[in-house]
Length: 466
Image (cartoon, rainbow, N blue to C red; front, side, top):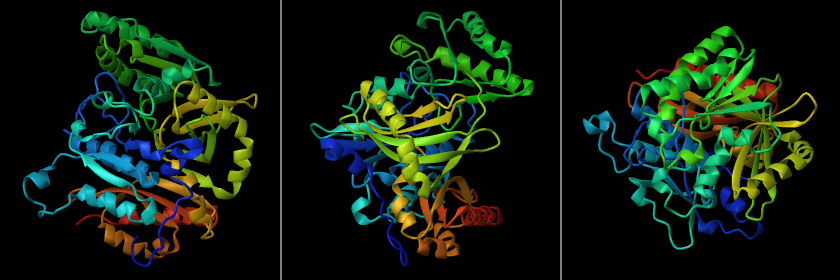
């Protein structure tokens, strides 16, 4: 907690949710990191070659930025709702400024301070017990304690998990959703037919890439193409025009070669190389956050509207608190259906589902994020914001800030004081790069919220690191 501000008190935390229906949160350790496709960006998290992932539309200028985003920034944000549970984050390698002694020596590294400052906003009895793992060997579980992760990775798979890693991997898969039996837009799965012994034969690989792309070449527009394992829309191609089609094919030709060559005898049964071709349906994308208890009961957490940028990449979501009771009632059967499905596959824990209303009025599942999601915390903040008179909230990500955290807090001191602004994550970058930040903000109505969004964006655009 900072001076002149009241602590953030969440309506419930993961600790509370894991304890429902006779569960024991004390038997769970959270280990949050997103696997980095095909790159070991930090020595703390080895490359995952069995559980493979893709991000063909992501842009990362260097490994250090990649590690900061997927090992610190996003996990730090997702860990905000942990409660007093053990939360393992994965250590970053020294950057060039640290190696060259350009930054003054400190007892705590910048990303440790970033994490502490974000979690200090919470009431002390809801702050997670954070540790930083320098290697997978640092993740040691007491007897009868299990691990809960965002996505399965090879280096932790030997440890006991709350959910079987292979089952979890399949639930996260776009391919798995297409075969799930849940209501989805019409979808076709195109699997690679090559055997592990064939994936390094360049002629066979080239022919297989062309076979797998044939439908992308021939299908009538518009439609959607997905790779099986990606986040934030970084593996989703929305093809509306012939130009979109050609751009997607250019990217997918290289991506498929990589995916095919990642198939080997130990992961072939997971079907890691496929394309999912899905019909494009007009309509609004919405998100439902829920928690599946250890007995399989579905708990409604929140209903949000998703926000995407001009490149169809996810950049946040917004929530209207007065409508949540109505949405909870309206989506009760849908929540129960999702919970039953997930529990039948051996899952319990947090989950997010992107969906739309189909032409016949049915709920259609567009994507399943079987983990904490980017807007999950908005449901947990209902009491915090409503008690202060704020009915509309959103999460802005990423916001690039060209000043120090203290200067940022001083400029927005009124918003921090009245509780309408919360730092959801802060990733410090060396001079002159701006810091990468996610911010949760709220307003008394949509007009006030939009005004605060404009104020944040104007500040971000006006302040550079000199």
